[in-house]
Length: 365
Length: 96
Image 1 (cartoon, chains in turn brown, green):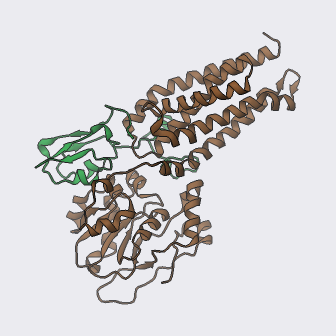
Image 2 (tube, rainbow over the protein chains, first blue to last red):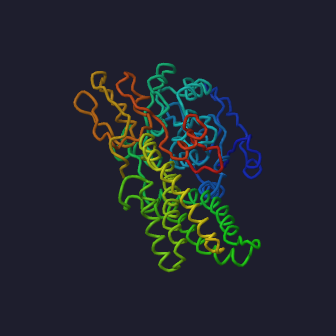
Image 3 (cartoon, chains in turn blue, orange):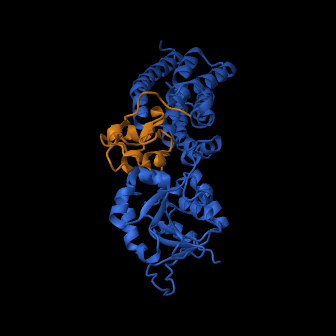
């Protein structure tokens, strides 16, 4: 079977790298008036490369397939219809899971966002699904009236409204596309385990690069600033002092990023307390305490470090709430209400300590 | 893995429930369970407020203040003075 990788025409740079699929008009089969693109269930090296790039960079923000109607294998009038988002990784994972099956794929326009997030934003929603069902003239393509939507699309799809408007009854498929075959074999029934969203150490690990990278960007600004402050002398900026006095700050700052963006997410269930802010602070405190033992900086630097870096780790760890599968808005709001005043006061005290340290160093105090 | 206790805005009104089972089908954290004729709350504190149950309940038996449990989105919302929004189109934001 010919393998076609698809991409969205509005993202020019991606279009140049991937072979775009032309809309293939199906030969005039009886009573199949929709425009269908045929796709393979196999992944090419490009698909694997794309998946990796999505995990480590903002590449994922422009990784999209054309919304529309697709066929995997050789579906007929009795074949199942699966719904997906037009984020290419979501689409790829679904078509790979359908290997060996004959199925129809209805891809909604979610602006290149995955199913769960798009459901949260409202693009993977009731209206868009109804629109695609009507546009694809599904009632003419198949004899049955069943649609399988991903369970994680449910936050914005009202199945009963879709049924009222189109006649198609939605069954929610399993959370993980890998379970689709088993779900079909069980007669469109997902086990309780298939219905649950999980968050394994592997799930958390693949998310950490996108926690580390934004944090490291801020770290670069912080390091430049510390270099400047530490090098600042009444006589001007001394390069050598900036490096020598700045070194503990560079090391400890990096350890704070590591604590909040990597260690806390990875060890998440094993760190005491439910609050992400407290988890991050605990990990940060442990790491910074150990590091200070080795570095043994001057007293004001140590005081600054014990205050500032564990809270920096805490702040970074709190950001991970956005990547988890179980934190609620009410819970995160509660954390923010508690943590923000602490962060702001600590930042203020840290600056005072730093000024004190510099003035002391200059012999002003 | 569990998050904070006693924070969820989820509410279930048993008198409106017809026992269709959609909430049990869509909840990713098994918050609901089917009893003989109606659904019931099994573990309310597992709720992540995604809103799937209330969206799919045709009988208005469930309410929840649905939204993203994402610190970056909520902080951005506070700063911008707007609704919490997940900056998924934004390159600097790792949310989602």
